[in-house]
Amino acid sequence: MTNEMPHELSEEQPPAWQGKPSDPNPDPQLVVPPAPTRSGNRLDFGALLGRVWEVLKTDWRKHFSQAFIIAAGFSILAMLMISIGVQNLSDEAWALLNGESPQISEQPTTAELEALFALLVEVFSLLGWLMPALLIAQLIISGLSTKIALNHPYYDLKIESVPWVRLITANIAVTLILVLLFAPMIVAFVTNQISLGVLLALIATGVAIWFAIGIILVTPVVLDSNLGGINAVRSTLSIAKGNRLAIVGVSLLVGIIGSLLASTLTQFLSLLPASGEALWYFVVTNFIPLALSLPLSAIAASVLYLNYKNRD
Image 1: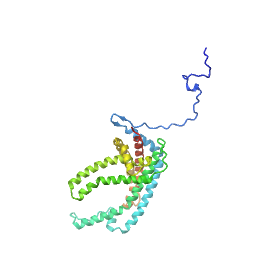
Image 2: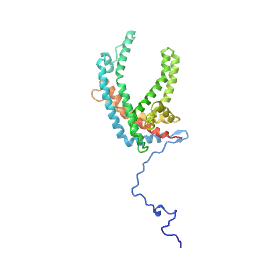
Image 3: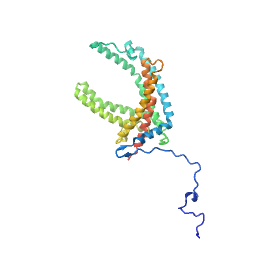
């Protein structure tokens, strides 16, 4: 016989016998894809892409619906802006915009070359009306899609708003750095130092590629860390250090998928009525595909950033 009372249960007994009732309605557990790891020198791209897919499939309606609305709105705005610019457009420039080749002899004279150059300047000055709207649309879509991705239940960062001013200053800093990289090359060519210019162009291109790969993560860095300008660039490059292979690999694969989707949409748009107007076609096919490619890129950048920001 034992002197132990029935209610004095030992620790070896199952939890059900220790008076620990189970929750009748347990909260569902969120299944998170495994963290990317290294096997030897091989990066686990599959795990990274798995997380991109999980984040996308949860909120894909939100990502693509807002992106299409923004892209459509800015395409209409761009058309209105260009319609103002075409009022003073010459007949030759209008013909070039609609796909007609300028008349020029097989051995063009200096006058013909000067006229062709003036025609190209006129056309590109018109397209300059399009670029601000295109850049703003890209910025807005990327910022909003990144916010949705960072607030995904896997991460739940609870970002309430996009710091637009900081995001703009970070992008301005990126642009200025790229301009400074190629400035010596431009000076060399302007001063007729062709050999030096070619060498500087090769060096600047290599550095720009290295820089561009690291700066892919700048938007999630700005939103999560609330940094802007050079500070955002510095923080982004620090996070990307040692991880450029994974960043370029995942970004390239996601970019190819986005490009295929955008290309399919572009082919469909070319079948629409009045697509023979090259100006209309150019505007629409530059804006609408953004709604497919940019959300995918924003999700990939967010997943990569959150994967590497707390690395040892």
